[in-house]
Image 1 (cartoon, rainbow, N blue to C red):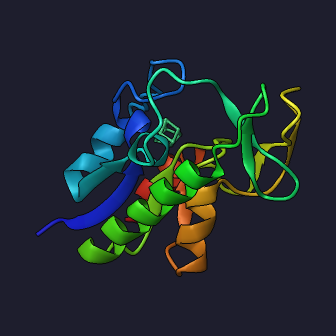
Image 2 (cartoon, rainbow, N blue to C red):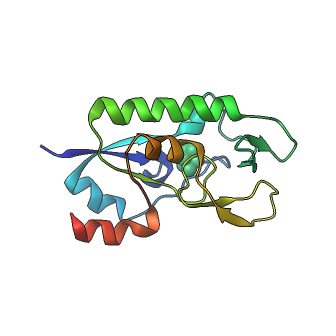
Length: 148
Ligand code: SF4
C-alpha cells in the first residue's frame, strides 16, 4: 500500500493559486508512483475564493492583502483543515509550495508586497511542523525522491 503524502494542490496542477492558475511541478508524477497524494489548498479550504487578492504574512504573524484586508482567520482555518487531513491519514511529511503565505516553509515574503523574502513560514506549513509533520518545498523534491 502506498504511503500518504500531503501536498499543495497547486503543485499537482489544480488551478487554486490566487491568480487562478497553478504551480504544476512535473516531479509530482514520480511522487505519485510511490505515494498516495493528498492535495490540499489551505487558502481555498479556508473559504477564500479563486482568484483572490494576493496576501502576505506580516511580522506579527497575521496575513493581509495589499489593501489591508485581514485574512488571518481564513488562513488559520485552512491550515487547521490541512493538519486534520494529514493526521487522519497518518502523513509523516508534506510537500508544500515554497514562499506561499500558507504553504511556504523557511522563507516567505515580508508583508510589504515588494518581493522581499525573509526567514519564516506560511501559516499551514508552520502548523504542520509544530505538529511534527516535516514540510519540504518543491525545490527539494528531487533530493526527497532519491531518499525514498
Ligand atoms: Fe498552492 Fe498552498 Fe497557495 Fe493553495 S494555499 S494555491 S496549495 S500555495
